[in-house]
Length: 433
Ligand code: PA5
Image (tube, rainbow, N blue to C red; front, side):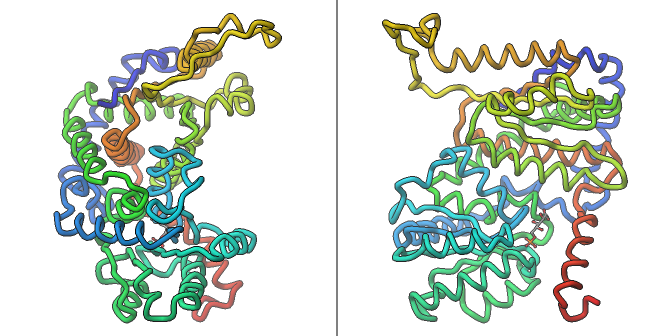
């Protein structure tokens, strides 16, 4: 079970300051669960750990089996909340290099529609040469420019390779139940499709088919992920600071009020990088509005200690850190003895690599807290499917509560529209003068 250690925040906030947030955490949690807060028509994610029907799970698993058997490459087309969750899940569980050596039976997974890069398109097109591939296109609105262009172009590649009819069997659409261009296209073209519930917004959709289909294609046990999320939901129902979600939401808001407006989320796992990006979107797009919000920055340890460490330790004092810890795997690396010891590492001979990681963690926390940077630690336990589900739940609930505490609607994103309006006008989209 996820737990939150706040023993290294007391230099920046006091116990009374934390306790002062308790009523607000309570009110925010209540507003979510009794669905009385702003944006309450987007609270379908609260039910996702339990609301997937058995037949839907079976259909996802059957689609994943077909994709695995018939594809060397599976392409996930989507952007923002329609892309980050599945990639975060797959890379956290299987590592950033999971695609190496993959092919039919356990396909390589690529992500498209998350940029407007011609170079990325050219690389992908070259990589698909001579390979069997299929794709899922994920878009709640069905009209987002980046994935729509990528999908149109990939569909053309599929049709050229397999012919129009066979290509239809290699396309899966994940979109709103009734609304949008993609829903209409799926119906007209006869692609198999899955629904994103109308009351679930993109960044809260990872436990819907948006995340579940790509995870299943990667060979992840999605029932375990959902069970972990359900366990998380049950464990975070407590109405006190014994609830890890309350503690996280309460502390980060108390720190914000003391001028700590940047949260750095860190982990010692390289596979966590995309999870960091998922978390960044979740909190950034949910909280950053009406002139408020904590700026979320993911960082990778120990790599970023050699780049951001200086700023964190010695910069303007606007940061706090949230450090995620995972238990190391059973099989470890024991550092060897070298007779010449030219690198001077023999003092570590016989020690596990995970011991060095632990000491790096301890040393970092000590240094940063000495430098006035508060550090929260989230203990996650073993890195597996259940933990992943629990972690998704933990952050989503924390985000909903935390945003309500800030007094903003977590479920809209009015600021994202401004760039789109300008881009459409510049592109000459009909009706966008
Ligand atoms: O979280 C969100 O709502 C956004 O990041 C969307 O997921 C993103 O803009 C993609 O939108 P759509 O799924 O409609 O293509």
